[in-house]
Length: 239
Image (cartoon, rainbow, N blue to C red):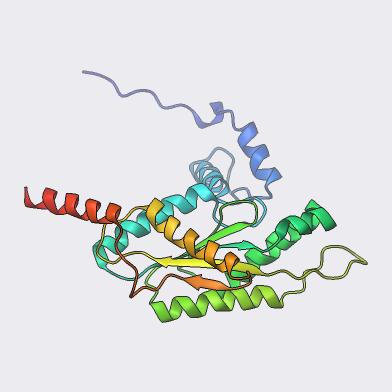
């Protein structure tokens, strides 16, 4: 009879680097006896939280966003509920860095992140997916609601006066937004959905920036790739 593998004693674990990482990030360490079960669980939870967040803004990072986007694609295919993906970036952001420095650029990014978070619902996923690029997943979002939310985000950012340094005039910025709805009842992919939203973002920039362009939910077409995926699923179900 085989004996189960011996468990490692908690105090033998080398956690110095993990603890240092959490302290540098300003994370709260567990209020429990060190190396107790509750303390170790708290450390693991804090590390998971740290690995899923963007350090500058506290928003979801790109890796966690892509996982959430995959889950939403599956949910829409099963439930048929509408879902909207918004992608946006800060207009002429390079000029902010070049004129005022990267510290000011970081302040602008944080301010935009805050404006987005204050405008969307708790159930929505807001991520920083690049330098000045953001994305939002809005589950169960009808066309009329999506259009209103995108415009509210744009207006809130445009109205901000961002303080970046003492004695320096507050900065103002605008954003361009693109959006696309996931096709209902269709097994799509995160890549196709993102490409659709990106096309609308490029349109917003081409039309002059500081605007939101959303693909029409009613008029959006199922792509050839999505038709192929749908056909493959149907074939599997019939076998």
